[in-house]
Length: 212
Length: 212
DNA sequence: GTCTATATATCGATAGAC
DNA sequence: GTCTATCGATATATAGAC
Image (cartoon, rainbow over all chains, first blue to last red; front, top):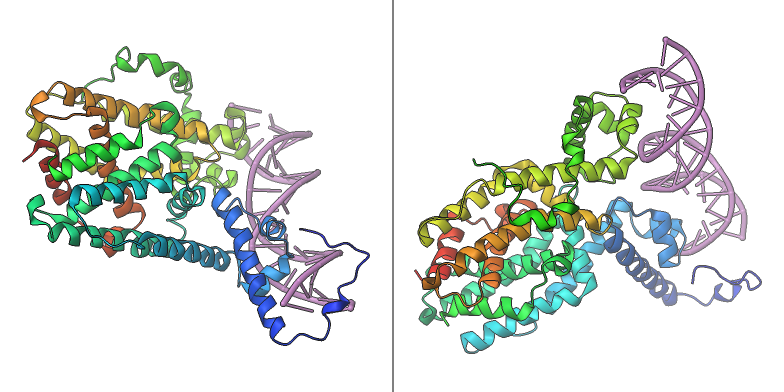
């Protein structure tokens, strides 16, 4: 996708473009973001060159600079796009049902993200660049961690039979233990050193919370 | 704190940890490693230049290249040194005592690492470079996560009154929820967005595990 | 061993043709 | 808007004096 055949000039696009111009411009932006997402999430911020992004996205470097101010602007736009998309996926289901069944379903749904390479890479890169881009770390906390934690603690509060004294702290523990399981198994490669079946984590966690 | 037990349960993994690099440390080499640790853990791998390391360590660049093969070799040696030092700190105390008191003490001791900038930065950098340096992620898992997990699960097994069906999974949950608390609060900046008193986490966690 | 000076490559960002 | 070509800065790593 990187090169056009040199024998065929692009004159065919020359004049009949009004709205198409806008549409093709925004699709170019999308094209850049998709390529940039692949390479930035795979290799991190600093090791990724704008030349590499241009190649990966199939556009020239100047085209990137006509859509984004600089490397930081492109990276921020990309993280924001991926993060918000994950937020939308996160809360498609409502929190209703019996505690054991519901919490088991939530936990397994959360751990399914282990298999999503883009999710794991996003987690890695957000942590990696949290010092250089603190506003992106805050974005991730506000759009992913905080909403999830608030939903679960509200559910705990509405089920007093669970006898949870501190719903917020318990929600923190619930999602935290699952998140660190993903982090250690997939990112810190514990799955090769001390593999752990995800069903055992879920079962023990539910047992703790629900006094099973 | 007690000595690091060199011939204890970790013996079977010690072959993957090259202690020779530490024993044969000359003072110049140690000087380089100290300066390199500061700058690498603060800024990450790629953004750190060898010029900056030379300045920070107070030596010339060529002196670095006479002690280490290249940038990767220096970085690997540094992570290995810091990781092993943390391993020694981690298991200075023995796991004995009543569950509630002991687990509370362990949890608070673990969360004290939140205040150690070098520990937090190491966690960030190991995660950040886990794709480029998978052997360092494995080193961290083998020397920090695995021993801690094994010790705690052994303690759980020796206290059947806790009625823990899956000691390994529960140990995973115990340390995982604490680690993710540090990660979210300090690295993902949740302490500014959704602050949480560490005592609440510890209390809720002990309550869950000990059926308080 | 340790320093200064430098070779060589690659980076982010821009200029100018079309 | 999109391309090719290039600038100035900075990177890793090395050569040679002492």
